[in-house]
Amino acid sequence: MAKSASRIERREFLKTTLSTGAAVLAAPTIIPSTALGLDGAAPPSERVVVGGIGIGNRGTYDLGCFLEQKDVQFVAVCDVKEARRTAVKKKADEHHGNSNCAMYRDFRELLDRPDIDAVLIATGPNWHATMAMNTARAGKDMYCEKPCTKNIAQSLALADTMKRTARVFQVGTQRRNLPHFAFACELARTGKLGKLKRMYAHPMGMQAMMSGWLPAEPAPDPNIVDWNMYLGPAAWRPFNAKLLDGFNFEKGGGLVGGGVLEWGSHCVDLCQWAIGDSMIPVEYNPPKDGQLVATYPNGVELIFRETGWLPLGSCPVRFEGETGWVEAGDSGQMVLSSPELRAGRDVAEIGGYPATFHVRDFLDCVKTRSLPKGNADAACKAHIACHAANIALALNRKMKYDPVKNEFVGDEEANRLRGEALREPWRI
Image (tube, rainbow, N blue to C red; front, top):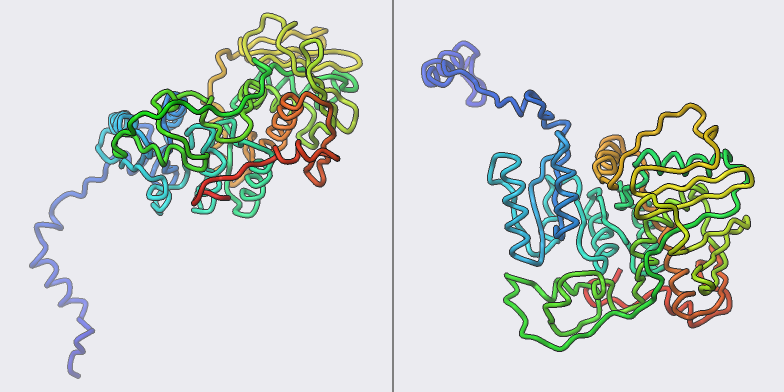
């Protein structure tokens, strides 16, 4: 029978292969130890491939926490500033021992890469929600710095987007993964303090402002600083170098949160966790005697105050129940109304609010597809509480919030502050 052109006898195949490829077959096959997971490196099947967007001061710290993890491969950076792009590439390449970290000016090019599993979003707050929703729609998980929204409307849209796309979202409220804060919240949430009555949060500056507008200066070359992309969804304004850094402008054209949102998104988030993440305050009062009081549907009070704290470091919270209380801060320490509340528990004291544990929680959830501690629904509720308190502060009057309709009751002016217009093409 004649041989088919598509059929070669096994013996002939082996003879041809051995005669033409003997040198190849004789050479040893060298497999890098990193590919096998040796030397402490995770094998490729266990790695999380990460890209970063907007990596400035805070983002560089977060990136360091990611690079500490043996299963992270950081492959791309996007930033509107050339100096930041090159600095991050240098850091990543030196860590991985290669030159593979790609640089982008437009975040959409980074999101188009099919090899990237997760994204670190550390832009200014002006971009957080819009960037996170674009990342989710691109099919990627994300660790997003806080505040993650500029207003109530964005908070709701962010939570809805993460639910519909089934993406893993971790907001950078890293105190949820610190032992003493977690234990304090557990005491309140599980009734160990008796019926919960009051929770205290430190806003570090109760002031409501509008975004700034500074005199026009000549705009730089977009390759050095892309001002238009830096503005993103915010209302347009002329370039001024002083607007390139800091939080005053980056929250956009609407009401800026001040300390109520910036620091409150940590402290109020812990209070939300202590009450179970199941509700938000429904009544907000303007400040009186240095305190802004909000009330939950069950009568528990959330009190914003700047003074009267124990010396336990920054970002303090205090939970008071009918039979006991606990206060904790960034020193890693906490004070209890009674030593019996520890019930023999040895709670680690980790000061300085490191993000390493929060990053690890995120990466584990990327692999298991479970909810991280700073998930989008928890972030939504905590941010709405901050935004509503900030609106009460700005308008200086008492207001009621309907958590079903997500609007203020009978207050048109307050309702207009729930959202803001976004520049094209960045509408959500």
